Amino acid sequence: MSDLLKIKVSLADRVYPLTIRRDEEENIRKAAKSIEAILKKYEDGYAVRDKQDLLAMCALQLASRLEKIQIDNLVSGDDIGAHLDRLSEKLKQATQ
Image (cartoon, rainbow, N blue to C red; front, side, top):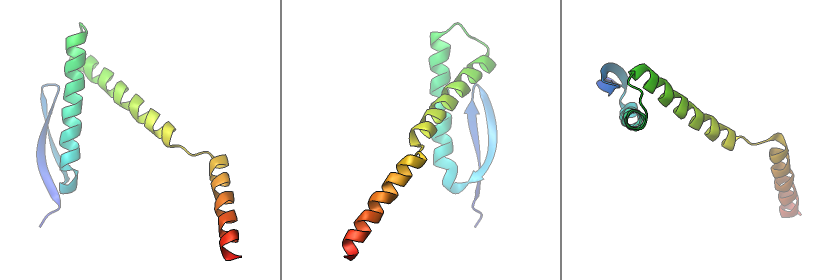
């Protein structure tokens, strides 16, 4: 049985046929729904009627969120060193 699935996703009044892995379907559909919600919010809130502009604004918002998540998840070298020092100390105590 093939692990690939053909689906159609609608974004900004266009339908995009995709071939994806079956385990990606839920994420792809959720992402498309999120994009459509953001587009609707921009369309209702601003006098922008060009779908390309709305898509660009949506892309910027989503990319900004991703950047923030990546920055928030970064661990500095000092943090790693401190964690390793504490772990080393605990190992020394446990082996004595």
